[in-house]
Amino acid sequence: MKTPDKIMRYRKKHPDYTLKQLARRYKVSVPYVWKTLKDQYINPTSFKFAYPNYCKICSFEINNRSKLICSKECRDKYYYMDILCDVCLTPIKILKSKYWWKVGHGQRRFYHNRRCYYLGRQEKL
Image 1: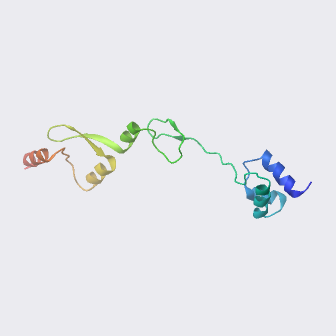
Image 2 (image 1 turned 60 degrees about the vertical axis):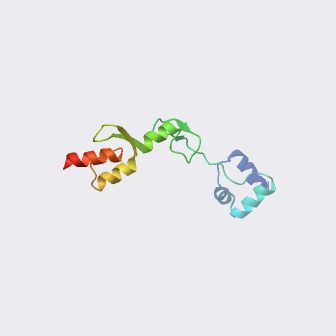
């Protein structure tokens, strides 16, 4: 049996093998394996198993590998946090990164509008 026939037969049995693995097995070059498979209309790119991707919040399986979060609700839970205004106790939705940046730079009080800010400054003095 000729080498191209061996390569094609082995590739059909083992579609997950890379071109480099096939070339080493039959002691030929990688471009030769590519050309042989291409000439016989066999897809030369190897199949790579993709592990499932899960949502960071609800652990729901996501088909898209580039996404971390499955829905808008999970995105809001992942990126935002709810804090209370220090004066009127109104809930404020703020980015977690923005909150931690402000806390790291010394801000300890949070206000939801300018009026509460001025009232809070007056209470502090």
